Length: 124
Image 1 (cartoon, rainbow, N blue to C red):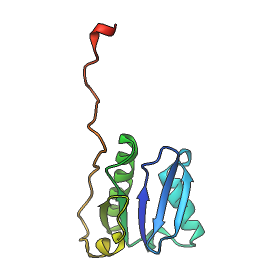
Image 2 (cartoon, one colour; image 1 turned 90 degrees about the vertical axis):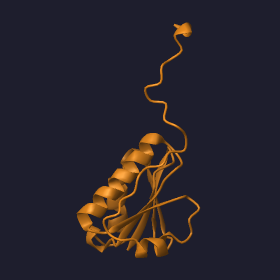
Image 3 (tube, rainbow, N blue to C red; image 1 turned 180 degrees about the vertical axis):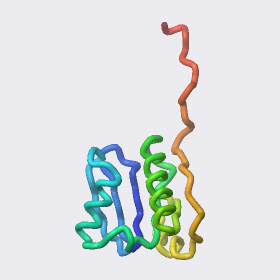
């Protein structure tokens, strides 16, 4: 089974299967809890996952980091391939099938990070 994680929305986490079955979960439930529910609904296990893709370059900074970390960690533990995609990618499963195991994804952000920038002192 191939899975695509989209954690870019503030309110929901979306897992999509390789056959375009969509599972939406509340962001409050968490990425891994959503995956656990998906696996239970599909009556399958982590061992059946053949590859993981993740949507990058849109959404929240923290959401992107969490999604990439979850995908890379699971891929490492399961010995499967990963792929970073844009949200409009239609052929992610085919690309994922040919990706070598051991190549991990990096978060790409929708805007420059503003962490650590000096605040305007004139407003204080």
